[in-house]
Image (cartoon, one colour):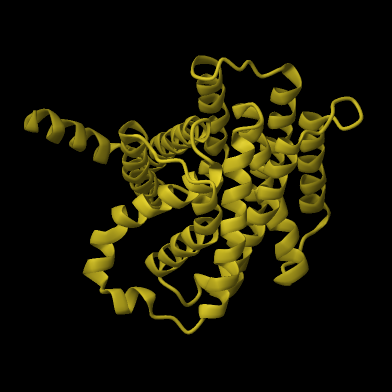
Length: 307
């Protein structure tokens, strides 16, 4: 067994970095989508706010070795507590909206609409961070919104409360990523994640207590699995970005739709319609272009700085 592991490790390390990054991102996206599938399953038995609280409690436990190694004082030490509070409250509302919406709309629809968070991030970065956007980037943003409208089809189909929650979650996720961009300038990743988990637990604790349903042993085992898989997901994603450019990895993230469709069909007996796939493709194309354009601009800035 050990010999087999070493042989696989050697093959993996000898791969071209770009190919290795694509493989790791594909695995990461698959594990993340599987985690959302488990959350949807748990949400059929437990209130969404309880799922949020317990899921992040176990995620904190999974992080405890890293917290102990860094030290609690160092982990929680910050000069930007107010920004952590703001992002934590927004993140808590985002989690409640997402976890609730997951139980109300088809799984692949929720997954497709969640991609619009990147579009809201782009708009927010221009409006609030002073980033510049030309006609091509704004065109990509508009096309992304059109993709969301294709999925929702307002006026033809009734926009359900679940779909509204997922879109609201995408908006909150975009705002949260904006605040994350600011926090990463001074805060360690561990500090950012720990504060986010603590506030998500705090935001969901009171409604969870009011609607508490005692989880079974099976439920708790699923929560433990989510905590472990989430850690593996983050590690695989971090290594993927280390091995490959973001522009190469951006389209790979849309393999999440394939995973979501498989989970929807075989686990939840849901078959996505044609318009869901068309809208998802439109959103995916717009976001891939935004990522590609951002990489081009970054290279231009780096060349200018070197000169």
